[in-house]
Amino acid sequence: MQQEDDSYRPRHARRSLRHAALRLRRRVRRLPRRDVLLAAALGVAAAAVIAAVVALVSPKAEQPQEAEATAIDTTGTQRAVAYDEEVVPVTQAPQSTPKDEWHQGSMPYLYQIDPQYKDYPYSNGTMEKQGCGPTSLSMVYIDLTGETTYGPTEMADFATENGYSTDGDGSSWLLMSEGAEKLGLTSTSVANTPKALAAELEAGHPIICNMAPGIFTKVGHYIAIEGLDDEGKAIVHDSNSRARSLWHWDLSIICEQARAIWSFSAA
Image (cartoon, rainbow, N blue to C red; front, top):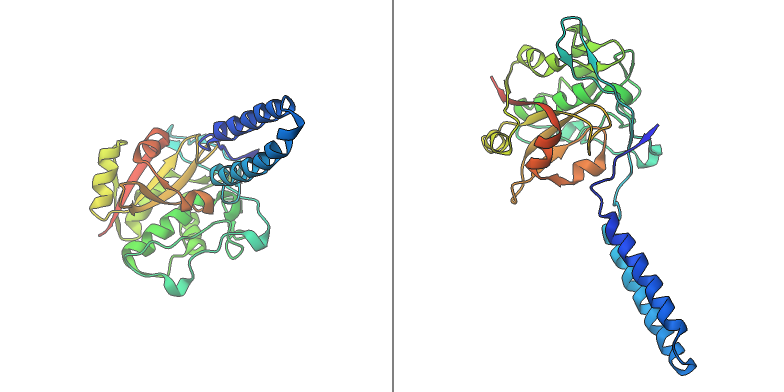
């Protein structure tokens, strides 16, 4: 099992603080005894400040674990496939937006690792490990239509029945184009540039990205994007991580790591 890539965390800040603490202790040893008590008091205060800063730069949510894979189909067309899982105690598992709060114009947060979905069979496995594709499309579908007939498990069934679920490998890219069209949505391939993504999101078109190895995945993963915040950052709905869903992302980071991007609108 592989640990999530935390390269975007400010680790250097914590190392710098530890080095500063070591230098402070060396200086205290050289002080006259009458100054040691004062130095000790200052050390307690410094420790409190260091602890507060470390808390700010440390991860604030669960650390998801993932194991994913990619494959090539028999026609030579690349399929986006993924095994996604976030292993946390059930009491800490992220809770999806309740069904009675699903409505048009508001993308719900749905998690394939939610206890109510995670054990549902999909792609000769479970939603917990392989369900990022149908869960992402379910969020987009609810946002655009307000219909509650295609939650994560129903969307998984749709993908399986229409041949978009791969044999133990997750979901084909065709789920996001041909599959979305069968659901009555308009699916459009989007150029992989921040400007193109921003234009689609500003037009009210939610997006699904297939991500290459990087911050979001070790090998392959689908994420949905609801829109932009006031600073122009992407509001991501990652079905495999509440932590990444709470973070708003620069469009440049999304584009650097995306392999394919689709925007959607109601037909």
